[in-house]
Length: 228
View (cartoon, rainbow, N blue to C red):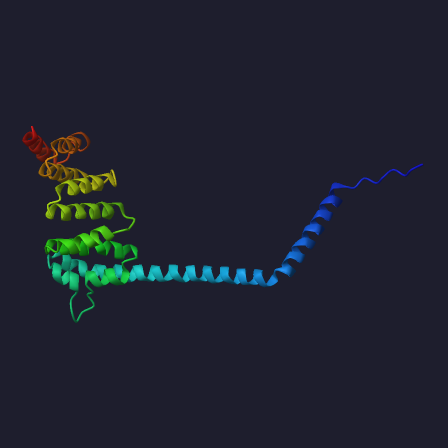
């Protein structure tokens, strides 16, 4: 009479599978040890580089913040050329130098808008447009300001159609921007200058419907009357 085969427990099966898996893993490691060590080392270098880069960017942004704070009073006083160049013999660095040194940081991106504005006020339209279009920061208000600034440059060059489109884009960046009604009004004015009355009417009517409490409604009505 044949003996009844022994039943292999689930625990034993799991243990056998674990031993097999461990054996195969060990065999794979022994065969590819050099490659694995190189890969792990490369990953460690990448992680270290990322940490160092992050620390450097944080320090650079802090320095840009300090330098921007020193030069803004000069900008706000209307001394735009000095704000661009900085004040010789002092620790006040100009907006241009801040952008050149820290343009990739958050505060450096903000400095681009002030630098563009300063150039625009000095009638350096091409230079202003260069910095407006170069803005790539994440702040919605400054992004809208950059688009509106570029729009003003197009308008100054007589490209009213493109100016109007850029003002419209500026007004769409953020619903909570207090400047939206002003952007739409300027879009309407530039559409009128471009001979596009229907487009002008659309944006001017939008001021009345979406920003009824705005002080720009009066001017919107005035330009609508001119169109009619």
